[in-house]
Image 1 (tube, rainbow, N blue to C red):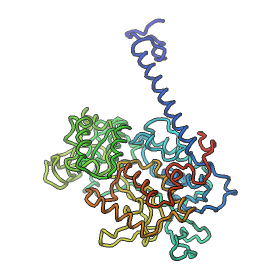
Image 2: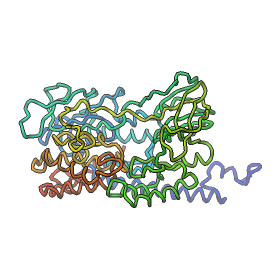
Image 3: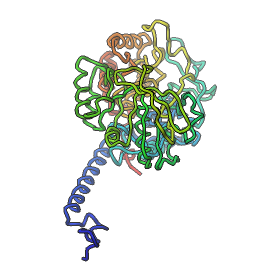
Image 4: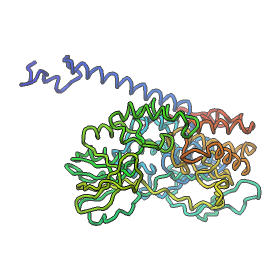
Length: 533
């Protein structure tokens, strides 16, 4: 075979690198083979999980009944679709509400950039047992596709109402001393035995007032709306250094931006995108800073930040807020493609901003070194507005001036149940910060806890016992820097689930059902439930 001029690689090797006998071709072939084997094992393990743990597919809509109860689920994102599928797969009637203009499930994932993807390994984002990820870090379209797959396969498309929930109120059939029954938006024809408010924590893009932003002559965009923005060759200024800011910087570089400057008011912890490291951090059982927290912080600074320790938090501990999970951002800084600027935005001009640079040990507002940063595109990486829970009755969340008697979110039973009425559950809608994952097995656990309450009332807690649980956790974590319920780890959440069963022995027979969906007198998973398509 003749060789291409100026090259040691044959024409066949150029077209089919896997057939090459050159060192590069051999390495490519071996790497590809390893990747394919790992991918096969990865998907095979997920199929096994789905086969064992996925709930049964429900019967047709006209063959269902309300023998176990009728439950409303508000919000058709990851949490809502997963919750509804768990309920309907275990014999409950479900009505799913969402106000998506597109009349499609997906929640916030359907409203972000197509380049947005999971920060954590997808094995830590198995929001439903039948989910089958194609890779470790899927992007937006695959996440939305898995949500839609569950939504369709479990017949949720037939029981979804595309309307905004403005009011949830008690039905007149309520009896004093018993859990409530509920109606939504004044519709007396449909009465619910329980309500899940799975509206998440990310609503509309958050806009903030930026002094003299109207002077900016270039493009201004929110970090979630960069898909249609021409960034090639542009100097991009990103306001905000949280997860949205880091992702915006990466999106800009992926779209061939000339340079990105990230403006940070304070430093955030950045941890590796590594399954083992992330799991170990989440296994800290106390859910707060401890005298030993300096160990993971030292390891992160030494082996992850390395020469960039100056941009790691000065005093804030790694267990005091939600960290950013990223591998490439620090490397972009080392390469000079990203400039990290800590300080305060002072003013906006036509083609730049005036920025006060501050040293690491400073606080927001302290005096700094004033400089001008030039740019072409201004990105607001300000996150999302937190959706309001005002549609729920206010008496569900009593709150007094005394912090010891505050039972408003996130100070809830097991961090999701109203202390006044366990038939109201706020899965993934009450938390603030955590080293955990939003889309994991806890969604199903919370759903099965409420199922158990409905089918076996003797397992349900009283308002007094729920408040006592909140008070005890608040006392245990009263000195936690981030607050008693404002921050937790996945290990702490697991301890809560175990304690939930041990504190009331009538719950023990349903231990396996609550934790993994097996037993409990409900149908076992069918093979139909794990077919992929």
